[in-house]
Image (cartoon, rainbow, N blue to C red; front, side, top):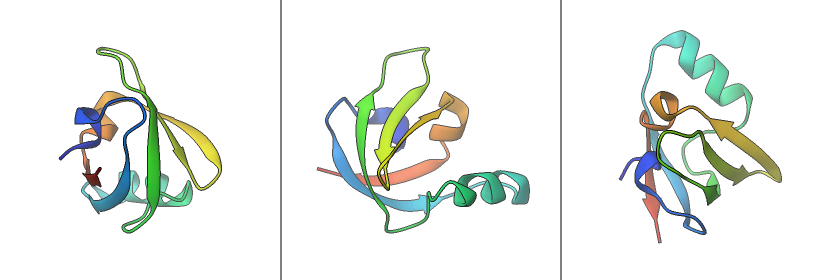
Length: 73
């Protein structure tokens, strides 16, 4: 499932990140790598996705969040 499909309080881990070199450099520099555990804090339509990852609250625009595949529980 994509990160944009998760709901608030969903926990899981990042399975795959797709994108060009610029996107991959940006996303990995903030610690979003395969195998990293996360919790979705907020995911409202037409708003950025808020996730808690590596003791940091991160806001991702929806286009970037759609490139991230997760295994959610």
